[in-house]
Length: 178
Image 1 (cartoon, rainbow, N blue to C red):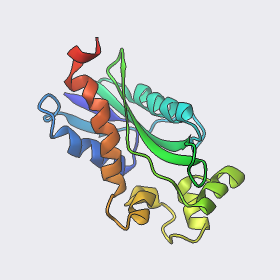
Image 2: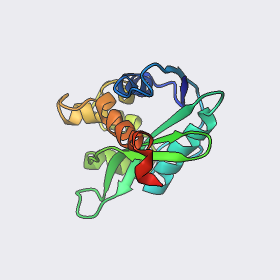
Image 3: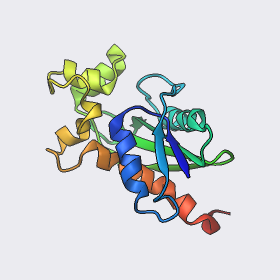
Image 4: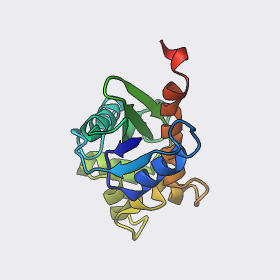
């Protein structure tokens, strides 16, 4: 069986490769990464845009495979938070007909970072760097901002795995979603 992932980001690719080992029906699959567009702004700023980006990536990656995965992180409005927004990761799995969606837990970025995203049009990596919180210009390709903020208690790969696991609920329990 072949699985494609719509990303060349090794953190996302490794998350898919590691998580499918826990699923008998996927454990023998070969995983291939493809560079595909999200079709949304480089830093999604709503749940609609984040889900759309994940779905676009999954659909674009659906090439000669059984399943394709699209993973997109973005900001969503959350009332009573310090900044008004939290980050969430969305995984969309596409089987050629239906999408199977899952989300991670959510967390809030520092106020200065959120301001830079909205006022400066920056991606999170860029905003975190510009805010002086990291020297890693591509922190999202390593432990991620979640790793920094949790002092490495939760790494980005594990955070992405949450979204993948919740998306796989549909495939593992199809009888429950008829």
